[in-house]
Length: 334
Image (cartoon, rainbow, N blue to C red; front, side, top):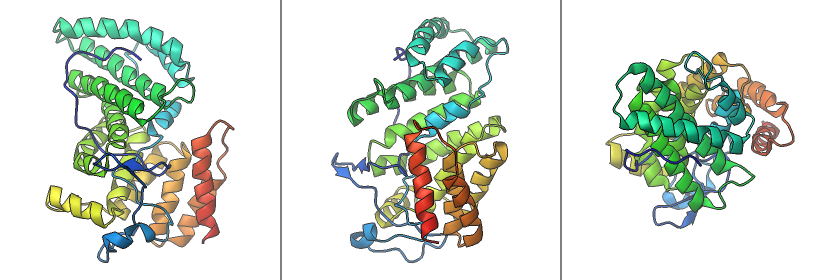
């Protein structure tokens, strides 16, 4: 992986990882299944903690952690058309990353990152140089993410994955600090924060949720074409609308009250993502179906679940195939 940039101290990150399996570690370090209840906007009748894992809503799904972005980094790479510096300097690097030629991309990024680090160390305040360095840093974070989740030479266990995600957080944070108007930097910071805290327990996830939402919103504000930030915002709203009893108690204790959001707001975000790029990812289509299901819009839920179940995928898209299977399972219950 590219050498991390000197500067920011380790960051306490944001929230993520669910909807795809494995569970997460609780704050004592023990493995915990992802359990809980899903409800609609009406959260007035919460189950007791003892019964929380045995309850489910019409969506038939486990509680989503706030905010669930599992697979977002890979999907963002596959769907990306990231802006370069105007002279296509990053075109070849972006091609290598998109095609998952990670070793070759790593070689190019090491040289670029060394140049960026020199510029940062020299204290340059030239806007174009700051933007260029920021572009290098978020791409380095993107590569670290892809290396961590790669099925070939990727992280061997969650501990190694956590170390790599922490490296990506620092790289992407540096990208944001160098150029606050760089939408991709904010997006990758949010993705890496999500992935990191997805391995650090529900309390860390919830306590960091507002931080990640801030960067999702900033990325969405700066780039009105990228479908990933509104998808992530939708997962954030969906997750907080589905917090189980213990998670809700902790969030209320931490924030004083739960963040103001709703299933209707989650739906609006997923619709915005789809508006920006139609059928760009099976997970966004699936979430449109699940959100309509939670809102008791059965006909619309069926429409989007059928679309998700019919997505054409390559044989290598194992994670997305699982999303298709989830759509089929939900359809069988309608």
